[in-house]
Length: 509
Ligand SMILES: Cc1cc2nc3c(=O)[nH]c(=O)nc-3n(C[C@H](O)[C@H](O)[C@H](O)COP(=O)(O)OP(=O)(O)OC[C@H]3O[C@@H](n4cnc5c(N)ncnc54)[C@H](O)[C@@H]3O)c2cc1C
Image 1 (cartoon, protein in one colour):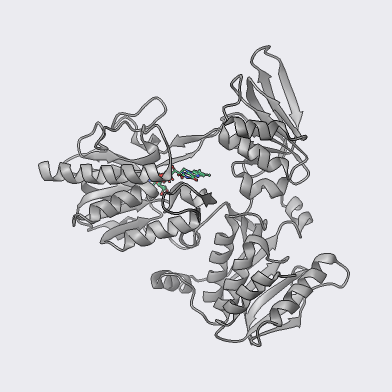
Image 2: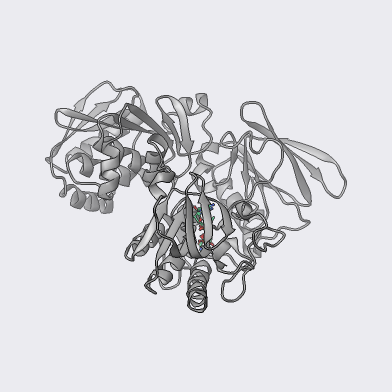
């Protein structure tokens, strides 16, 4: 089943196995996936004397668990972890064999200290780029803590289960049978969700900062590095380190790096920040900013941080279309990530709302998977580049409605259609379909600032050429500002500008 290149790479990884691994296999003789899985595992076991297999009866068939000899780890793969999940299998084999996961010691200690029984199940698609992070995080937790188990379930191999649970977004994670969350989640986010999140007392006694950065995307990381390199006391508060980069697959315009991937770049950003003396406060959300003697930033957990200057780099999030049904059917047919969730709509009819580049790219991508794509664009013309429009119009299974306003996403327990109004005639139309992908751009994460400083009508923070906002001592950078272009490299540049602007302000005040 494995091609020569993959076999070659795999055999190198398998040489790193530190102990014996026992794979328990639950297969039946009369289904194709079981037969493929058996062939795959036979090939795998044949590549290392440290791997043995034995027959077993597990909760799902076909599936297999990865164990130490004489000790079950709780790691199960239901289906064949190829595609993006192949790395998850390789890492599970290495970690179960005794190789330490590449995780900070403090995180390992936190996982080991979790008390209770946690049976996780994650539904994935093998083409989902967000899924491996979640699968690998849950596997690390299972390896380190005997009370934690994790089964990765390939939705394509367990279609009935996916349908009965109404799963229309991956990864979808269940804990002890209850829905736990969906979408990309970091190891730290999962741990914070099941253990007590740090409370305000952990932040008491922090000395005021010289520069406090709010937001850990490219702009925030760049600000923190530039500030720390000036030798001033720097802190960074980030709800999700990496920001939008974590939702990005391939990046080809990060100048000097021909190709990289979002998760890789996000990890490098964090690693680079940690090279410096920066107080990194992850999984924390700022909710209020006020200028007193110092600038005070209150976090959701009630802690108040003080700083002489603040750099706001809170970025942006997907814009909602804001019609009835959108919130109600989120992950029940309403989706925002075509790469991740497209395969769950295989053979179905979906709509894409938005005729810009991201909408038309999504429509082209989806047209190869689903039975039909209906594109809805508010303006009389599509805004996407003409090369994308040409490609779109060459596809046989796409219908484009221009100059229409989405009125409602309909459904019962999941999406069953979309209603829209023809803006020229006022006529209302309804199309029966099973999924809606919203692709209408981004909205800045600045609501929490209210009118403490000047923002545009769109909510973007107004900055000058030093990155300074209308509130003295407060600077801003990246996608949360009125910068006309929203790109990684631009955010990083503006982060550097804001940090140098803040340093200049500190010298003069
Ligand atoms: C799918 C996708 C693909 C993309 N592809 C590319 C590409 O190929 N090339 C390219 O150059 N650009 C690309 N972009 C755009 C690029 O990702 C953004 O321009 C860039 O990430 C903006 O960086 P930022 O630091 O300003 O904001 P973000 O990346 O949005 O980061 C914001 C940070 O602030 C945190 N935050 C938000 N609110 C709070 C709060 N209240 N308290 C604490 N923390 C908070 C977030 O958790 C996050 O850490 C893409 C974007 C998307 C969505």
